[in-house]
Length: 223
Image 1 (cartoon, rainbow, N blue to C red):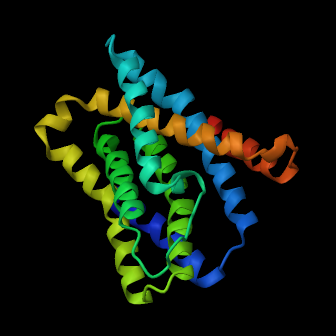
Image 2: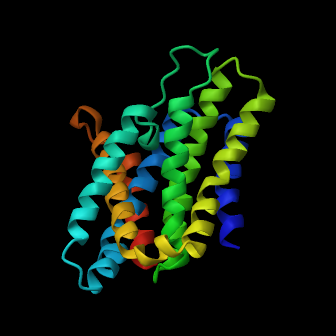
């Protein structure tokens, strides 16, 4: 069921892009909601879990997650938190695609052993839908054929399930599950705070985005 939900989250993003063709404001509202939800889930559920088991190096791995996402941002150009750049629409964006795949694969690893499995799963789902929309939007604007675009989007959809599969069956990943969860928390903290900081561009108050942020935090709190 976990695998199906993860794949479905990307498929929903693809359907939204090719079916509804959402505007930039809609995507930004989705990002604001997902950023608030990710931040609240990380603080309310994931952080208490990793610190419940005594490990004095957990904080180091959270910082490593932040640094890792900074590196991935360099290649993805910030697609994880709403940026999309089409410089040459005839060339496939391998750096963007590979960095997003690495990001998605790592998110799936701790799912098999996380005490708050449902919280983490839905955090990933909420986060993956706008990413799929952003990636799909790139393909819509590019000259890459729809067949290849959908093929690559489906490959991206399989990354988190693959991460979950290896997290469940790899002895190495099972042994260091707490450290990996800490890295994922660092990644979530980086992405969510960037989204929320950028949601108030030029420090202007936006009621719709603020409402989306409140709803995202409220849903995470009620969960």
